[in-house]
Image 1: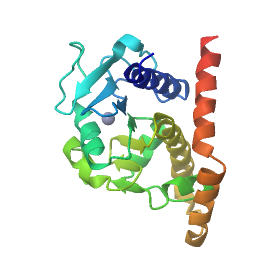
Image 2: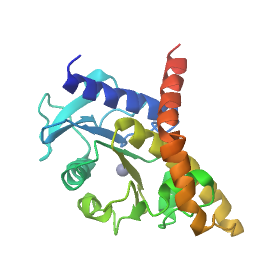
Image 3: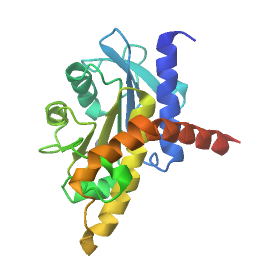
Amino acid sequence: MGKTLIEKHEVLIACQALGAAGLGDGIGGHVSRRVDGQEAFWINAFDRTLNEVTESDIFLVDYDGNVLNGKREISKGFEFHPAIYQRRQEINAVVHTHGFWGTALAGQARLMKIRHNLACFFHEDQAISPDDSFASIGDAIGTANTIIIPWHGCITVGTSIGRATALHQTLEEMAKLDVTLEPSNAPELPKEWRDRIKNLIDAEAHYLEQTWELMQRKVKLKEN
Ligand SMILES: [Zn+2]
């Protein structure tokens, strides 16, 4: 498989993994992968859920939204993908879903509170967009790896498709915990602990890489 086709296949696996994680039930989720060395990216078609996506539902799209290898419709929200790729050269994948708990957090129109050690992935690494316009997202995300679109859903980005996808599932789990605990006024994890914990779970324990492997195993289990 050529490099470009491997990039396309990565989008397929990520869609299936998000579907297996319960994040792919509705129309409107999208996953993209930058094509190295081109102003283009692979993204799933709009008219299939992440659960349903097959190789033939993934399209090569340029930064103006032109589908380069077919005629299928892609999401109207495609534009934040090139906006992020243009601003963030280190980012190679973008994931957007309307997972229930991420959307519940977005419905509170606030950043996630840090109430678990895994939530330290989002410590000083999340943003909230000023409104629901896709055009604002490229600027609003800044250097963060997560952006919450109020009253809509969430986006995660990563240097690899595995990191962006695993971070998205982690966001869903941490949003569930945070939204559930919010009415209790549970305390947040102390600020001075967070950098150390983030380094431990990411650089030392490789939690996102391990989670990506787990997500792929769950796809295989579902297939068998
Ligand atoms: Zn959306």
